Image (tube, rainbow, N blue to C red; front, side):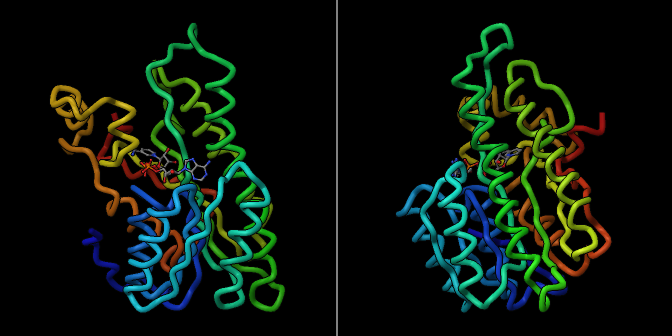
Length: 265
Ligand SMILES: NC(=O)c1ccc[n+]([C@@H]2O[C@H](COP(=O)([O-])OP(=O)(O)OC[C@H]3O[C@@H](n4cnc5c(N)ncnc54)[C@H](O)[C@@H]3O)[C@@H](O)[C@H]2O)c1
């Protein structure tokens, strides 16, 4: 359940967002937080039952909620999702490129080309294809002057190394590079592009990554964050809404680290 308050962030009501990987975890929480703030949301993901359920929850807030089934590594699926978002009110205002997969517990000496390809395709190519079509749509906003806000999900792994997670770490470093470059390309068109970099967040991915259903692993994970706990999906949703909103009009090419102090040490 989404319990976050959207407070008074300006410029969200009536706007349209595309959220990839929105059927669970951080993406789902962000979709519901935006709906609560009065924004319309297209959720793109691979799993239809979960996606339809999230779309229904979004609509329950009195806004438009649409699920588009698709894979971010398939350019036609991405185009379809962007078109669905534009079709809602005539413009795509926000995008949260959040779909991702983890790969942990694999030392560099044991790495496989298959593992590399899967993670880089979803985490990096997926963000690239999404931004490609989102930017094309956003350049048409405001009578062709352009406008919009794109947020890509990086990670604390986007700025530090992690033993046993080299490929995931490389993929998130790549997301940061794509983000900064795109931000420079569209800065004069009123389109802002930023990353959000979560620390450990209580989602299915974290539990797969760390095996933290195991109480010892969970205690270690909580203790690894200076605040003494991992975060919740809502604690990422609200910073993403800030980056979407008119409260962040001078923020672009930036990385918003939301990690309970994990990378401060
Ligand atoms: N949970 C954490 O601790 C944490 C920390 C830092 C960054 N992240 C990042 O946050 C993002 C969201 O992860 P989450 O923690 O909410 O986990 P999650 O597993 O709940 O969400 C990931 C979503 O991406 C979707 N997805 C995966 N491959 C896809 C594809 N090819 N096409 C479309 N959708 C696809 C999944 O189905 C899922 O809905 C990911 O990019 C992840 O790397 C998570």
